[in-house]
Image 1 (cartoon, each protein chain N blue to C red):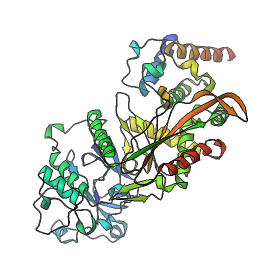
Image 2: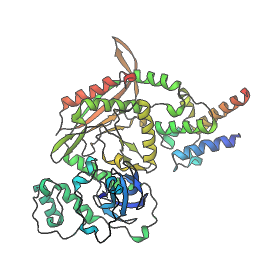
Image 3: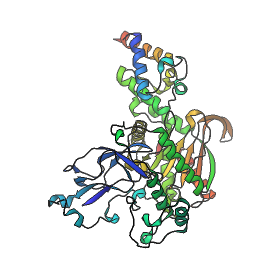
Image 4: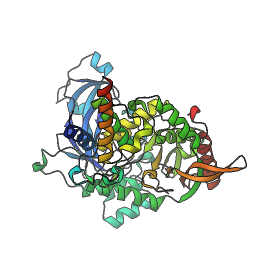
Length: 87
Length: 404
């Protein structure tokens, strides 16, 4: 999966939760909870969606690492990379 | 034969637009089946039937806006369906009228007889409450055109309000035939305004706050969730709703409806969950029997409820029968919120942000996770002392998360 693919998946899943959000205009280092007004239930649904779609395990303790677009990308990339190396 | 009627989906609903039929004549339905979608000020609501049987006849065309209580379809009961009798259209008027007592709609909000379409009334003289008479005079409503829902057909203030709303409701123009189903936020704003203004006019609120140490809940949740895939993880909000539901069971004066100058405690605990919409608007559909659900089940139902509500697909039973409401604003940093009671309910519990505070436990100061739980109570039904006990009970329940 390329970097572009990962970013696309993240954006798609966020848009499933907040369809009205224009993620192209969201500062990639901004806290998504404020930038697109999502709450803990939305965030849980985001994590569930990433888990199902990409097969990555995202423990609750790691949630703070995913609260920005850049953070989510870095976290998912690292997880997918680690999976590859293990294989 | 029973009539399936336009339900009242809250104190502020006067009429609804039938936008989708999910059944057709001849279909069999069972209790709880979704038979139609109705657009209201709260968005598109899936309407369930409480009457099992066979759909005999659809009475309302798509995109018709009709007042609460209007018959939408006729359902042959199971007994009738087993012994088929063809009812010709000519014979139908001779059938005895369906009385409301026979309409098997358990939802308390629907119990009141519905206003009929506006038409000149017979000269029968029904008793009229003073408030109803005053409102009718003020607004130029002929009381002969109002059907009473009180004892002996007495016309109540709410009957006149309903009649006013019907008079004001524009019928849907034919050009709206292909209108998309979804949330109508401006209409929702009007509905919220009506309900909240009525609440502040009629309900003498009192407000209490109680600080609760939820450190035990946080630890318990972290332990539980660490071993679970994300689909099965539980949020603090679910613990809070369960704690409120259990406490409400023991304090029935906070769980029920105030109607016609008296309080009716509810036999079940249906917690209205206040759900905000991005872009404005709010709905508080019911999480049914929240006191009876396991935490996992409650969490899963809450996730489903939030998703459906935000997608504009709420079920009729969820809109009409919350017995108490829980609202949370903690996610945005608010430490305490003082809710406005949603009539005809008599209490709303507010939850603020969980904050880390220096706290004394066993004589020593340490950092603890504290949440401010508030109660807005209806002073016609309870006093502050009872409210304080109710809040303390919620706090106590949150000390033992493994028992929730």
